[in-house]
Image (tube, rainbow, N blue to C red; front, top):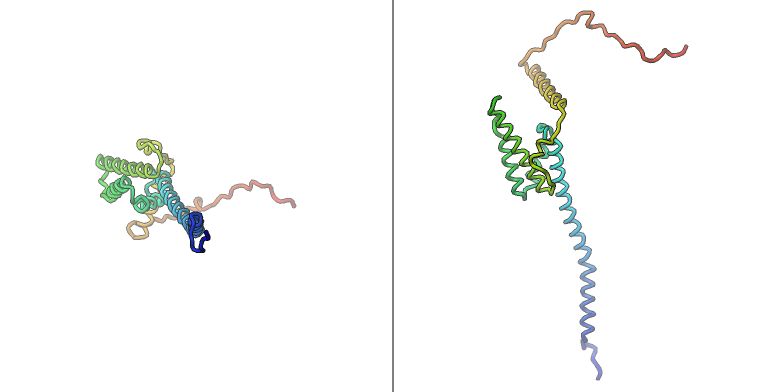
Length: 197
């Protein structure tokens, strides 16, 4: 029995399916690979930004006026929008930052303690969302800032406010005449011998 040209056998159907699958794999495979790579890059970049925020807040946790600290705080809402624990802690901390600071005394101490607790709650929530295991109670206890840095920042703040008060005409600038003894500048002895003649 002779078969006609248009007769299909099972092997022909299998070969056709293999050919179609190969064409689809050749066309669609690289496209899908690029999509997967881009998706993984986006996820990795997001995780890197979250870790950077955590790292910056950890580094500046005792320097709340530092520009890096403020910048990291302002990025929390953007990078952790889908972590409700972080969003809630962020809102509570920002609300506290917006409150009026009470005058010195027990109220001020209680206010600052609450502010500190809210910040460390936020930091702890960010650490959890970033996949970093930290002890909530050690965040504050193990933070370190040299006393000299704080003193220097306080002196700069006082100096700046004093200069601004003088420039704005709120305080006078005192000028005193110097005596001749005060104006003589003593040059230190030359530590090097004179040049050979």
